[in-house]
Length: 468
Image 1: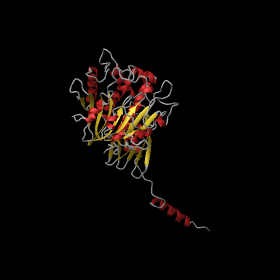
Image 2: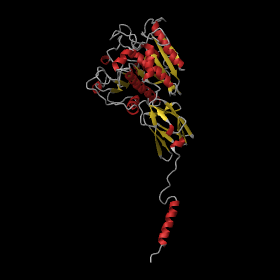
Image 3: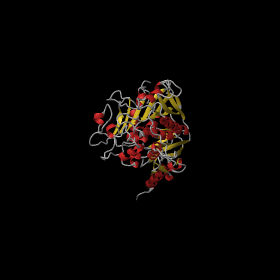
């Protein structure tokens, strides 16, 4: 006869073991749901709509909890970007902002717990109005370059060549100065007189300052606001200078508006230069003179980003159907076989990982003009992004002082026949890229690239003056 005692004992043992930690492993950790500790725009994540290109507020509660984002979403804490996209709560509650690029689509946020577990949230993403966008750029371009009897409808800030004297340039400079002042920047009209004649200034620049948390260093962005004078080569001069360089001028105006909402590490100048077309005289006057509003020589000059001739570039298409070239060159490029400066890593990261651009896109043929040191490898490459020695614009002024630099440039010379000619108008820009919408998309792409480069370079401690 079989006894039931062993079965009863085994059952009792099983019951006891399940109630004691260690018999079959530790009990699974319990976590608060991401929905209960994360708020976006003052509501739960499941109710939030993330709009591309726009700011979104968030709070995360609980020490040790983390929030991580994909590369096309940026986290800002205390107004500064967190380069690795990972924020941690250290004082009970973390307040910050999220910023999606205009090209973000499938966005997954991840909440991490102190024990290493995590919970991912698939977000609802919709198209928004980016903080820097092509539509605003076009509207401002149209206002500046249009001439009419109603000054509220058009500015007519044309004929901006640096001369002796040129009232049209002075009038435009006052308008640009008012834009930066209206945004709250400490703004100066920097007039440098080398001729000893106040009516013939060597240069007349707009310098807007944003103070950083570290007053021992300085960095900047800029574009030249002057245009090719009448009779200038190679096209005989211009009056709108829409592409060269009203386009870059307006981009700086939009950056200034966006940067109101961010904090910077170093004292930062946002500049509009004069006399670039006469040999970089404006930026040189700022950088190499000793004056109240000039570049401070007792601070480390970290980096400078330059905007010149943009918008007729990827993703805009030529009449042939091939994309226009897109150039972004970092420097100094001392050794063509090695990466020389850290800002090149930022340049590459922004285009590859954040904007997710097609970096290997090539055309069947070659472009008309390109870089100096690597042209054999890049002559048919659409996104020509790398270190190079290329000059011909104001970044050279700062590169010569040891700053790490980035220079943005679209089609030029053989790729844009209106270069330095009366045909360099906003209407012509629209025509050559196949419409206003295409132009807006192209300028928006390069403006976001430059803005992101600045934000990441600002927070990168390895970006130093090469002589530091």
